[in-house]
Amino acid sequence: MKHRRYSLRSAQRDLQSFFSDDEHEAYKYGSPATSCNKDSVFYKKQIEVIFEESYPHDITGKAVKELLNDGFLRAGPRSYGTGMHAIFIWRHNVRYVSRRIKQRIEIMERFSDDEANDGCGKHAESLFSHMFEKNQFTILARHTNRFAGRVWTQSDKNLDFIIQKDAINYGVEVKNTFDYMEHNEFQEKVDMCQFLGLTPMFPLRCPSPLQFAIMREVGGLALKFKTRIFPPGFQRLVTEMWNNFRLPVHVWDRIPPNIETNFSNFHQRNIS
Image 1 (cartoon, helix red, strand yellow):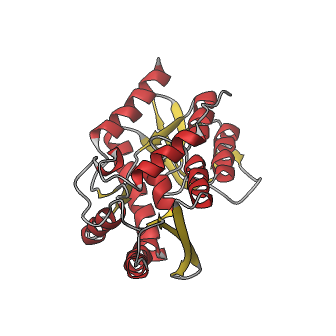
Image 2: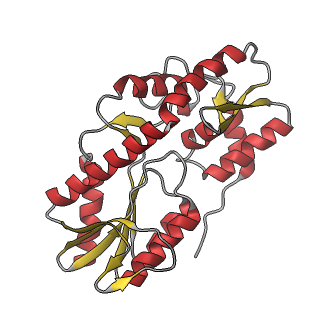
Image 3: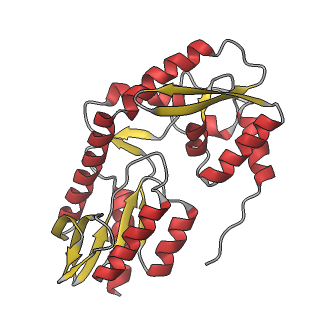
């Protein structure tokens, strides 16, 4: 399996520009974010997500660490919610950060609590199940670890869906989180699909480069949908998240056509 090599030095220069210049391209896409600019405070995972189109999360994290070591950035750890932690970072000459950190923590507590996480996860599963049915896929099972007489016994984990069309069976796992799907879990779900005789098809907010490569190797699909999906009723929170963090978030009531097309094209390639 070949891996693309990423330049840590290039990531450092890019981040240095991001923390110094409001004209950086990361501030240009999408609508203006009213409270997110070069003089803002950020938290580490936020920076990794903002730059994930250019660098894997771990490369961005290493670049942040180097800029902290160089003194260009400063950092302060904070606890929030129930047992949650974040490392906030800011440019070395930005002052009076405490109040801004407190404001952001108040928002983070709202989008990180168990109720919001559970609601976002279930809503994403529901939207993808509607997409499958709309495209005439049969949902054979939900939340299962057994298929065609076989049972996965290496753990108590299961797949979100097993779906079928044109005599092709897919094992589906949906992840609607800012973090990459934890790699051991990802590999286990791929192994489960192969054991059960299923083609893995995982809709993920953002797969890691390694996860894309593994899926190509096993003939599966990591279906990237990029934004964290929120249910209707969360629009105010989503707007605050964008304005303060520039995180990819949207309220969706259906899966967008481009993602549906990527899924359909993958199935058509499997047929042919």
